[in-house]
Amino acid sequence: MMVWVIVAVVVIAVIIFLVTRKPSEPALPEAKKPEALEPKEKPARKDDVLDALVPRPAKTVKETPSARREEPREEPRPREEAPAAKPSERPKPALEEDFGKPAVFDPATVRKGLARTRGGMIARLRDLISGRKVVDPALLSEIEEVLLTSDVGVKTSQKLIQRLHERLERNELDDEEKVWAALRAEAEAILGAGGRLKLRTKPTVVLMVGVNGTGKTTTIGKLASKLKAQGKSVILGAGDTFRAAAVQQLEVWGEREGAVIVKGKEGADPSSVLFDAVTRAKETNTDVVLCDTAGRLQTKTNLMDELAKIRRTVAKALDGAPHETLLVLDATNGQNAIQQARLFMETVPLTGIVLTKLDGTAKGGVILAIADELSLPVRYIGIGERAADLREFDAAEFVEALFAGRDAVSNEAA
Ligand SMILES: Nc1nc2c(ncn2[C@@H]2O[C@H](COP(=O)(O)OP(=O)(O)OP(=O)(O)O)[C@@H](O)[C@H]2O)c(=O)[nH]1
Ligand SMILES: [Mg+2]
Image (cartoon, rainbow, N blue to C red; front, side, top):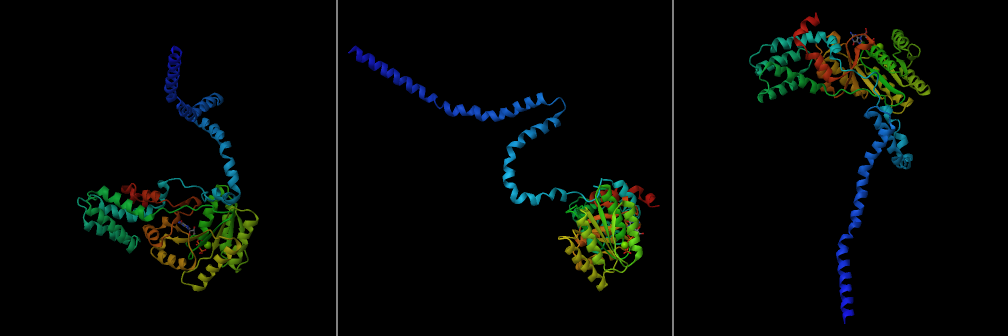
């Protein structure tokens, strides 16, 4: 009997022991927790190792080897995916490269070029706004008058003044400084982002078009200068076969900048000359082809047809060319420039504007009308005859150059 009692006690004891031990077994999931923590700890350990391996220098040096360490893990995936899409995408990084030297924000230089406009439009605005105790609709009307007579154009002037009225109604124009700030802000908004040229493919082909004497050939020379300074190879296509002097002018730039010229005989078909220029660039792996064309009045249908043919022929020489077709407008032509642009746009698809001779006018406000009415980015502005006087357009820089230090404007213009 005693034996059975002892056996029963032992069995109960074993059962109790087993039952009380089981709940602690979910220690298995818990055992995984330290593993989950491990990755968090590992980088710290790697860093420790790297700290030991990498001599002393600062954090930037540490980043490179740690990045290298991670590469082998990721490499196999891209390798498997690569054959389909990636090779065709490879040229893309090169496509993002800036065309010519990247611009440095330098309103002081632009300010010199805009001295006449500052002495004209800005000085007149200053005389109106300075010392005004009350900002009212009458002042806005007077401002509009200055804008209109500075070639800002009816539509753009009205748009700008309308926005100032809205600010006035919101009581945002209660002093002189706020009027200036609003003018600057609205002008910058109208000027838009501009947009730099990019080197798209090799060769990137740029076609320069416009009426007579706007500065096409000079702009090509200035661009060649920028590109050569950037280490790019350049071919100048002498597509103005009307005048021998036009080719010579291009040759002078070519010699000065070390760019190759492709030219034809005087009177040759400009399309075939530019076809040759693009073909040569393909054969010689040249970076950029800058195509000059003869000046033409937008109203001369036969000459405009010739321009359309030039464009088609260049496209035959290289698929996708011309990558940029820039209309060169002379700022001293004022509102006429808008009309010119409209008719050129009907003939060839334009990708941007070059506005030259801003240094030669007191009515530089025309740039606002051009940016507002044409829906085309202003790519470059010309503020003088030297190569450095062609600047990548930057609305913020332009507005800063135009408005800043308005008290000194009359002296600058003298
Ligand atoms: N002040 C100033 N002069 C410029 C600017 N751009 C061009 N010019 C001058 O404008 C004149 C005409 O320039 P071109 O480059 O020959 O003009 P184009 O459009 O090629 O002329 P065509 O070939 O006859 O149609 C030249 O004397 C240039 O030096 C500029 O931004 N400022
Ligand atoms: Mg020319």
